[in-house]
Length: 395
Image (cartoon, rainbow, N blue to C red; front, side, top):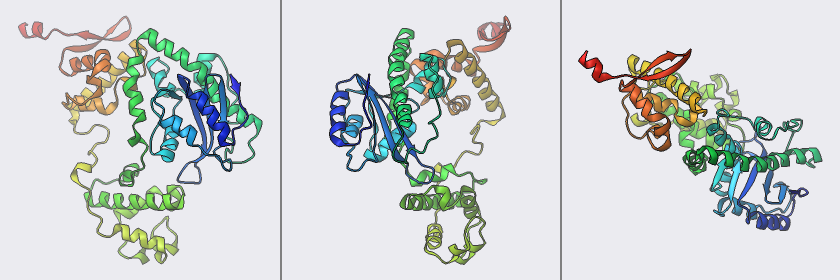
């Protein structure tokens, strides 16, 4: 594979994108900084496909990323391969309002191949290629220019190694018949709604020890205000107001702007400045949270009761056993909230009761909650045994 010098002009990028558009797949990675900003600063984009690999400098004066972005979101013929690509996809979404499609995430695929739920990139490379990556440039300042040769080499390695791993991984998925398991997961990752920043949902990230609708309604209004302030100023949320201060304001709202001087975590100047006035305006007439938005009373086991909670725990044990038996990450088979919903009586709308998940796990989970199977220790290992309700009734 030919590794090109750092791409800093649009003509070179366009020629590379023309060649990449003829590939079955490309591997993609980004380097960014977001410690001191609300929006991530895109510092480098690495792409490998066919005979070409390159690092593209989005900070280069005059460089137009359109050829590359069109390849990402417009070209349906080229598969885009990432590893743990959530933040990369968020960046592309921020630039285009769309996500790459079709896409493949090797971290998710590794779940179907028994490599754990969140295998890191360096461990992936080691396990598939036997290569130990030099992590010396990992925590570099990617926004600083000029970039050093070792930084660029390190960054391009992320996609050239991935270009070697993906075909091997695909072959193993086909051999094991597990490729189809991943289709739904990849489509879920590609859903643009995962990456849209909705200020009306920001309150869900803030911990507050209350379920009172009026408190949560104020928290929703305050969190929306903070999102807007942080985005407008391009500052991290915590630089505007920290979560704990937001929770305190929601629980004990100030009556007047002057009272902001007494709030721990706020500067005394907020008692008379514009940002303090906007904070107070966000609290004015903040409606209580709607009933359908209220979080469950017990986030861990919503609506279960004691017996239901025990059933949910048994389902989680069954999930561990089944995941071990077929060598797959348990998270790919079912999630905790699904198990709790099943224990609470749900029988529809659960991914674990559909398609391959039902075949591999869901039918056993149903058998457990409906009393058709039980746990037993066989040869020192925990196994499932099928009960015979008809025989028990006759007895």
